[in-house]
Image (cartoon, rainbow, N blue to C red; front, side, top):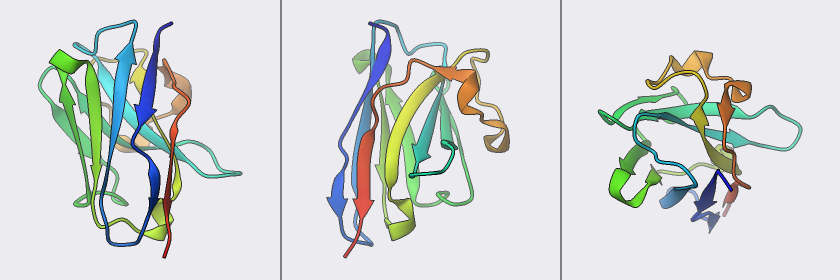
Length: 129
């Protein structure tokens, strides 16, 4: 089955760090733009980060810039999300997916979940004291 498998979520306190992994299954990460999304109940899935796996160029939304870092290990066919200085507002289910149409990241403001595929089940991140 072609999909991503996300892992690494959990319950953490504000100000701490967490690293999520997103392993590609059934396809190769190379030559793709990989988006990170998060979703809370009743809200649309929000794109907040993207990495172009060829040159490892990254983009971030203002809400996570300076706190989150995306990187990839093409040999392991895995994309990672390092999350530092976590806030309660970061609580969500986190997903990654591949851009259907582009091999380079679009502007963060143009990330639309409908334009991405190979969704996994996501991983829950809860930031609470």
